Length: 369
Image 1 (tube, rainbow, N blue to C red):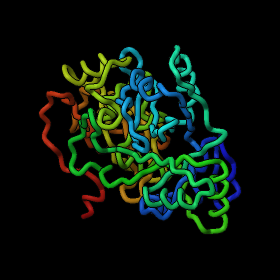
Image 2: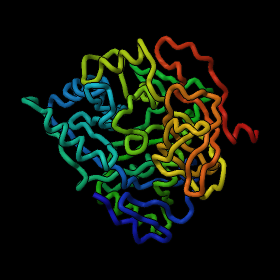
Image 3: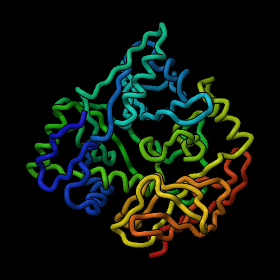
């Protein structure tokens, strides 16, 4: 359900995914990062799973250990195919009676359909909760303020574990400091009445809002993977450094586990995500799927690109593992090819037995200092 309650706000640019921006995407990034604004997340959907068996059931189906998930604890899960490729992803929080999943809108119908097919005789009831609930994001403090002021008094707040390494997880990125280390991000599941109250407060000047363009720029700068951007039909969680927060490597059996274990313990992921600092005009960013070249050879493609308020034009891309870490890269844009400085996230040697030296963070901010 795409809400139009924000469409009438001054400066709001709204499309079928929600509020793109409110006239100043760079300023909205600053406000969002500082905690002085919140973002309506119209590109998210909410699924609710009730029933006594819900957590043990999800534990058996997905990459995450959920059987003992305590009420109020935040985590995330992946649904993999039998070969370990990512099919679905969700942020997870349980309130003691219901497990709530925040998912990318384009993935919601497919994930819900799959979950319903997997119920068998268990006491679980997954449903679409979009008619009742919306999602708003921001720093933890900003979201606490939203929750405190909400007419419904909602307390469903998911705190992003990225880029920490959660129980059973494993991190491949060896850059210090990790660019997501200072990222403070939480998402609240609010009622539709709460959503209307936020829109009214924003219209009255009592609440500052940011759009999805700002949200995504902060995500890309933190190297945070997302289903609607970084996932294609053959991506493995290892390739996106997603083992750190979405996979428990020592939990019980689930679909795709054998591939996850083999790639991590005995091999290397066939592709690897990298961060790119893009040259060229700030106003021209490569689209998702744009080819990345090393010389004349296409070695990968862009998954996300953004104009960051401090780092300038940046992107995430997935490359062939064999692409040298010091390769001079270029990227296709509507204005022709531009150069791109590569920063390693998942090293070519990634795996449990890898011995890769830690690297100093490469960034325009660091260079400026």
